[in-house]
Amino acid sequence: MSLHIHVEKNLNRNAAARGMLAATFGLVADSPTTVTTGCGLTVAYAMTSAQPEKVTCLPCRDHAARWHLAAATDMGRLAPGEGFTSRDLHAVAMHHHEQARRFGG
Ligand SMILES: [Zn+2]
Figure 1 (cartoon, rainbow, N blue to C red):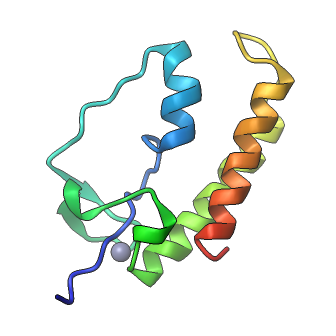
Figure 2: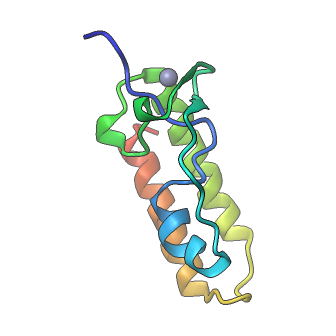
């Protein structure tokens, strides 16, 4: 088997967004059949993962690490409010930093 596991180009459906933000905004996305990957391919959704230990495509790992760092930075710019405390935002930012580290960023 030489098939790689990729990451979705837009990682919005990953754990932090889903678990912490989706509950507030009611954003529950259906899993699409195919997705665009971080390395620019179109693959079956089942060939992607948001879990660092499962992603074997190196360009996708780089993409995911950068994506998580950018997401952490974005969290740092948000102000508490709309149901979020600064502690919530900090927890999400820490999650993104941890994910970035695990993706090798
Ligand atoms: Zn890839």
